[in-house]
Image (cartoon, rainbow, N blue to C red; front, side, top):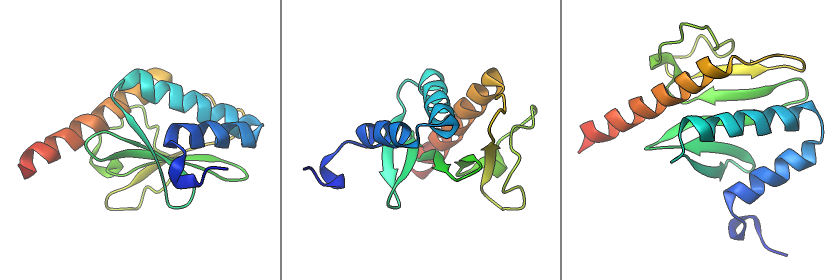
Length: 131
């Protein structure tokens, strides 16, 4: 059997979705699909002993799963415009913002993709500044 380090992050995320086998797995699979649609160059990683992470020139967001929520934490969420008010958690932080999805919630897909693209643009701009 392969160790976690020998398995690709995408395969580990697939396994997490399958393992959840409930609304949380469906929600995680759905946001993953939207992230890939919004940014076809996104890189999937697996960090902190079991957290799916989507990156492009830095972390875009993480996808943690809890008993009552799927939490999408945007590393630089406080710096992003959120006119559709998708952020509903971790609002007090200086950097991060999160979207908690609960069973039965409907995510505004268009606004979510816009937020993903804004996070990528911010990461890319920060990377260019460092050069």
